[in-house]
Image 1 (cartoon, rainbow, N blue to C red):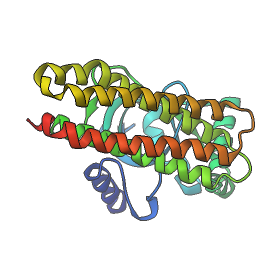
Image 2 (image 1 turned 30 degrees about the horizontal axis):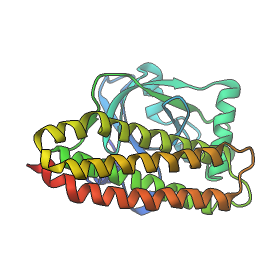
Image 3 (image 1 turned 30 degrees about the vertical axis):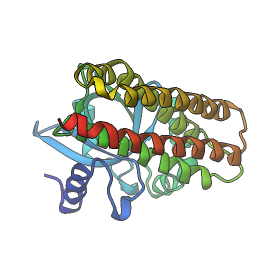
Image 4 (image 1 turned 135 degrees about the horizontal axis):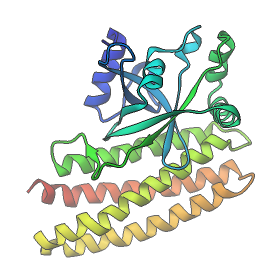
Length: 277
């Protein structure tokens, strides 16, 4: 059973689509459900995560620098198939403990983005593990929503939240853009591209069949997708530079943020009533 503090975070996380307040406000959190190494029972724990390349996310078994690994780490060693709740989406994943240079590089990126990880390592003699979680493909995404309209709203809020985090990270980056911040930007860009592709190829055609009167709205939304795709390419171009200017990067992030916010607001105003019907 989770302790009372964790249980409060879990309940707030699920109620607010992955956003929590208090000491974890502004953090990237997921809920990790593991199978007990001895009991075989399910255990859910809120953990911080880092976006990673190749459709993975990373979690770090810091236990705040405690002398022993957290229980969830021992669980996934025994049973590497885990369940991940990432705000809107829930999926099964395979957990892989990183070793050697790959582990060290990932932990260095984490420290570069938040020195608290280094503080945790300094408190303990154990080498703090870094674990990669890779989704196990299983058909359409499992979205924690009671209706298509609610699902769209939650997905939009997820993009708003992630862009706000990235804007804050760029502002705090100082004269140099770190490796983890680059990955955060690229992961967000890829997620946004995937979302718009799904809308263009599945949701919009379905709405057009059932609501032909919405053709002008859908055409405008598709055009906005194309404009946002250009902004995504501009952001990717800046972040791919070896030593990008943080001010230039912030400008590109804010251009994308403003355009996306206008787009999401219009889409919600126009499509949520149709989806509700």
